[in-house]
Length: 256
Image 1 (tube, one colour):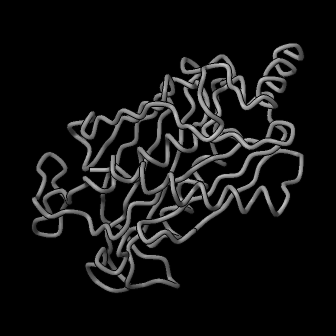
Image 2 (cartoon, rainbow, N blue to C red):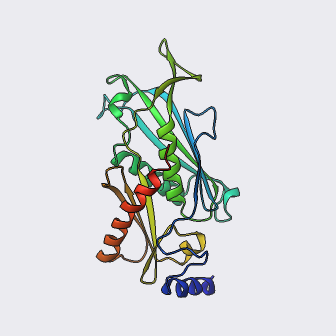
Image 3 (cartoon, one colour):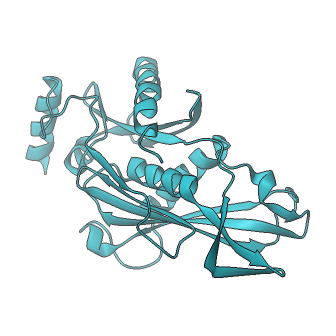
């Protein structure tokens, strides 16, 4: 492991990567926008060999007391042991909880959903929107793949049929979920004095710090999340911000 990390560090110092990419280059992205027929919205994202699937379900429930006229959003992530030797069976662990929170924050802080339009009866009844993320294959950069899968699933989501106060999940309406923006997350990993975009699993192991930046359609930065033990300089963060806005525009074109 140490030999591999040293090898990666030497490559990066020469502006090279194991798979031949530039330091600011993202792996190929392929999106299947409707892999789960029974979900109100879904998307399967392949980022290189990393595969993540997201599904959206809607149901009726009570609003939060401090937001009586807004719907409810809940985001969860499951790391299946078959997707990586690093994942173990059992209750959600720190990495899956962090991933769900980063994706959730990007959706909330970008105002992706018009939550007021999810209200049915103020203080009594609202639409509850569940975003479930499942990791199928972990070859690095799960956060960006999961965020893209969630954004695509939301963008395509429609309401189930709602009749006589009951939700009929076996039938879908033609009314789309009120989506205003398409948030895109870009994650940077620091190896030595260099920042890499879209690190693969080996590069993640060699990195000392991580920074995820989420932007929305108008170029505004809406959320940031740092990981790792080492610090990032102001110059590092500035470079990452500029590139996140640029790459966000490119990736956003893939969300249909």
